Image 1 (cartoon, rainbow, N blue to C red):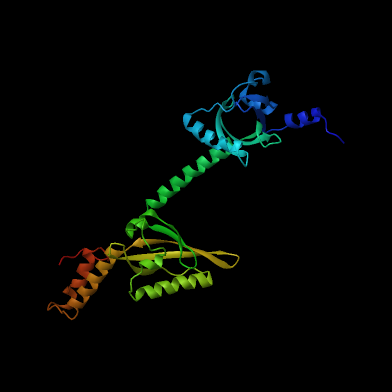
Image 2 (image 1 turned 180 degrees about the vertical axis):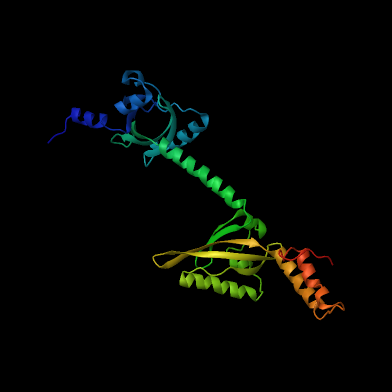
Length: 293
């Protein structure tokens, strides 16, 4: 059955998408009802008006660049236009295609537009939430990261990069590249491998790492395997810089050796432990009574 022009027109007019035909001079030759209702103007008012009156010059250059594709293969392009309408400023995504003659020369342009404002607003809200979440994460003492089961880093907190003195031209691509030859690292790496193979969380562990400027630091790692379909697909976790704490622990260990065997001459009840006094200074024995050395 042949389709009449009236049926074609009814099909176009019933569309919720915006449909327009534009001359090569950039003027509207046809607009459907959805377009005229969006702008709050009649079809007669819109006829002959300039298509895409941009609201800012920064959009005009982008649109002009994209629309040059309409005059050479593939004779089509997609552009976004922020348009002032009776409903306020709206973002319209236009899919434009050239109407060609027998010699593949453009005769006119046909465009279909869709209001993308809700999506744009949603993306904006999502970006704002991500920024707020990132601010919250970065303000804590812990630094967050993620890596694949084969140790390829997929995310590292900006503060981790700062801690390791990472540079843009660094040749190190895996977090294991920063490990020192300290034997304690082998035990930590073993826990990561076990978490990957079992899909179960391992207890926190410590690692010694070397920053890109040659300094050695200690970190405490707490990580969780991400399991999908009974297979570990990633490791996510957090770490904290415990370098100063390790120095304190080493100092306490040396002090314990130093004071080992020292026996005060006063009675047992009156004895004071030098090691206990040192721990009190460093605040490591919160329940101890205040003592002086």
